[in-house]
Amino acid sequence: QVQLVESGGGLVQAGGSLRLSCAASGRTFSNYAVGWFRQAPGKEREFVATISRTGGNTNYVDFVKGRFTISRDNAKNSVYLQMSSLKPEDTAVYYCAAKEIGYSNIFYENQYEYDYWGQGTQVTVSS
Image: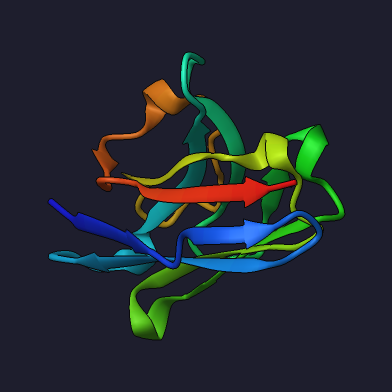
């Protein structure tokens, strides 16, 4: 089992940047695919980005491509989401999630594939 803790959220003006972190503990994090999801008030949770266990494969939802970058440092048991050119519609609680995949290099966009979730971190973008 792995425990996930997100950090780095906050209040930022439109056009600004934030870097979210997802710190893992409990198991060998390099065996896990990781995804970032978000949930805005009154909306369902949605996929944002995902990264394979080595970091070699990534994928993004269309509306963040070119603005957000997912990366990981397995030596630090951490995954990051660098968010730039933020918009008010990016306001949401952001969650990281992990799924143990052994030595495969796949990733998942479907939130129901993930077994472990953090508590979330609030991102608020003002106009």
